[in-house]
Amino acid sequence: MKLLIAIIRPEKLSVVRDALRENNIPLMTVTDVRGCGVQGGREEVYRGQEYSVDLLPKVKLEIALNDDFVDTAIDTIVQCSRSGETGAIGDGKIFVISMEDCIRIRTGEQGSVAIGP
Image (cartoon, rainbow, N blue to C red; front, side, top):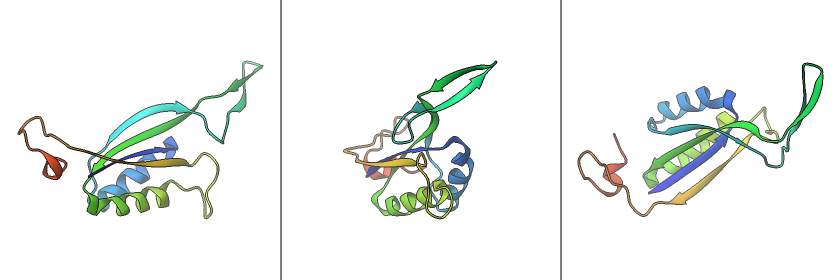
């Protein structure tokens, strides 16, 4: 079992979500986050004043998966989140974390069976 944490551009969320659903990966937690990386920040103007935006808006997806679905999920997120053919700084990252256990609170089921719907 793995936990995928993907940080992507907010405008890519609906495309990623729909593509994951088409690949039988419908379950995820989505959080609006802010962060900085290689992309850094940007300068903006508001009411004539320039200011620096250091933490850019992103979306964090958390997806618990059985091992059979990990490669499909990664490929789908990469294909749908990449800007253009070669991608761009700020497209995001995917972290893959091994999960020791999963427990479905409603039934008490444990392990990989508890991940599915």
